[in-house]
Image (cartoon, rainbow, N blue to C red):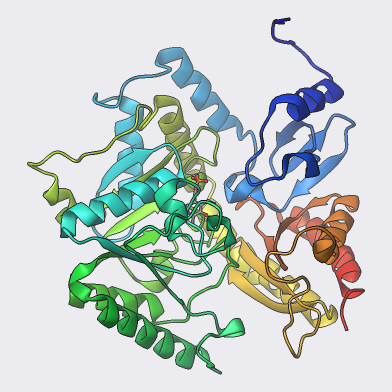
Length: 452
Ligand code: PLP
C-alpha cells in the first residue's frame, strides 16, 4: 500500500526505511549499518539516542564551515523565497555573484566559471574542454588519485574504486606522481623524488606521443588517496612540461579547494596556475550540490564563437549559488582560511607529530591546514601497512577496531585503507581539535595492539 510522508519519524523508522529502500554508494548493501543521524551543528552531529560525535571527516571533506552555519542557512531560505530555481541559459543574481566571487579567488587568470552539480561532472567537463581545445585524444592521470564516480572521472581515477567500472577507455594513461614515503622511484629525498617523478612523466609523454595528449590531470594535493603533499617544484615542473608540449594542465581542487589547505586554493601554495581547475565540496560547504570548472582565457576563447557542447539542467542552480555566495562571505568575514592555516601549523600538525612519536602504529604524518593523514603501519621500519591494500572483512579488522574505538570516544574518524585522515571543518575551534586529538590518541592505542 502507498503511504503519505511520515512527518516526524523515529530513529528506528528512519533506519528501517533506509535499510529497506536506500541503495548506498560504494557499499555491499547487506554489510553496512548506517547510523541514523538526527541533527548536526558546527563540528558535531548526533544520533536519535542523543549520542554526539565530533566530525573529523567534514562529511566527505566538504563541510568546510561546519554544519548549519546560520548565515548560509538564512541565505538559502532567502533565495528559496525569491527564486528557488531557474534554467541555466539566463543571467541571474545568485549565479553571477557566485561566479564573480569564485573567479576573484581562483589562481592567476582563471576567470570564467562553468558550473556543475558536483566534482565528478566538473572533471568530465574539464577533460572535454581540454580535448576540444587541443583536438587531441589522450589524458594522463596519476595512480593514487580520485576524480569522481562518473564514467570519465572514474576512468582517470587511480585507485581501486575504478576497477569495477573502468572500461579501460582508450585515451587514459596513468603515471606515478611523487610520494616519498612509498617511493616508486627508490628516492631518498624529496628532491630526488621530485626530479625522478618529473623524469618519469617526461618519459611517459615521449612514449605516448606529446601531440596526442590533451591534458594532464592531477589533484593539487591528492586527497582521498592519502593527502600526499607534493614536493616543492613538482607542480611547477608539470606546468613547464605542459607548456612545452601544448598540453592542458588540469588541477582538481574538488577536495583541496576553498580553505581546506589554509589557502583559498592549494595551487596557491605551490605558485602554479593551471589552465583548468575543478572545484566542488567546500565551495558552499556542501549545503546544496555545486561544482564547477574555472577556465583560462585561452580555453574560454576556443568557445567564444563556437558553442561549447555540454551542459546540465541544474548548472549554477540558484539555491546552490546563493549558498556559495554566503559561504564565501562567511569564510572571508570570519577569516576561516587564515584560521585553518594557523591552527594547522600551530596546533594540529604539531599535535599529530607528537602522537606519531608515541604510537608505534603511526608510520607517517603529512598534511597542511585542516588536511592531514596518518599512515598506519604494522612496522615503522618496513612500513608494512596496518591492513593490506584494499582489504575488506577480517583482513581489515585492525582499521575497523581503530574506527570503533574512536567512535566510542565520541570522534567520527575518516578511515581509508590503512590511513586515517584528520579533516575537520576549517573553522573548528582549538578546544574541539584538542577534544578530537584526545579521542584519536585513545583509538591509536587500539591500533598499536596490531603492530609488531
Ligand atoms: N575530485 C576529487 C579530488 C574528489 O576528492 C572528489 C570527491 O571526493 C571528486 C572529484 C568527485 O566529486 P563528487 O563526489 O562531488 O562527484
